[in-house]
Image 1 (spheres, rainbow, N blue to C red):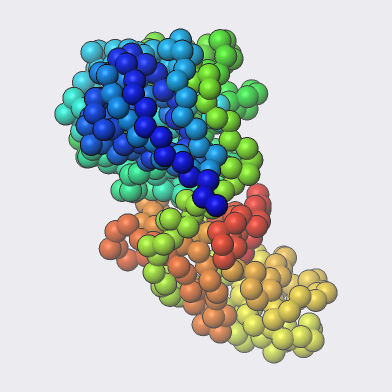
Image 2: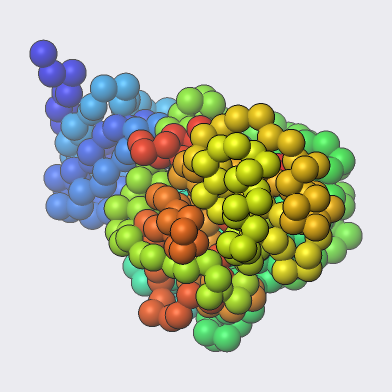
Length: 437
């Protein structure tokens, strides 16, 4: 039995509606406004699962709703929604600025992504060339988690996840705390690209880590890197982020504090995990399999194994010491450590292997340990052209088989191995703060 229901409602001017997906909205007559977009007669709006939006009725309207499992539509008191307040506050920015960077900060589920879409839509409606830099590495809507992403919107959208990535910067983890210098470097790189493109407006979204001194220090670094014209801080309750606001005001005189939607849905850990899986699946649906010979790469980040040079002459001695099937033996370019790849896991006397190789330490890996690892692919030392998943390695020739989505037709000169491993269904089955390969 289907749990989808269809209802048609009539609304008077000024009515505020809260819609929680999955719901499809069809405007039969009249006009609604949501996320800075006006939806007139014959418009269709799709609200996906776990997303909710407020809409204001601009003229008397008749609207049909197709409500899926878990979805809902309700009329709410105007004072319980933020449509008017947001519209007024955000529109004010464009009476003061026709160019600039706008930085959005707030906790998880505070409305950051929605405000990013609002600002983008308002800028586009005024004919301003606009970019979005999605800096939420954990719940990235433009590209995939583990990245900072740049989009170049050409038309208004209800959600920033409807835009395709124009460029990205691979961080390699969904938690920025462990890679702050790299995050800041990546943010600056994407902002510099926006400058090169000569855009009028850049809207920068950020992650939801805002609690504690470390989080505040991180957000201060983001403000310093962004040099925004204005900062918008989302608060779920009055004064929630006062300490953060005080620090930001030392760096930027234009700070706007916006309330989060009171009835906004708070996503569970499971919801957020499912969102990441969906974004991985969407991104890699356009991937192609490529082969990369590790020894031809000029740049290697995040990997002990791929930073070595094969020493096949040592294979017989290492096999004799280990008394097992050894697939690969390599020594780092600086000669400090060695790497051995085994066919199967077993106990290893690393001191004996180190003696054979003449190195200080030895790292042991097993065939298959490479599978599912996320990697960034580079065209130069600090410019990524795509992201991939390692499917396997031919250890005889040290050739990697990677499912990759590339954003430019450029030679791949480097690889950056991340700290996340995905299953075939794009579930995050391993997260680490140390090298996985």
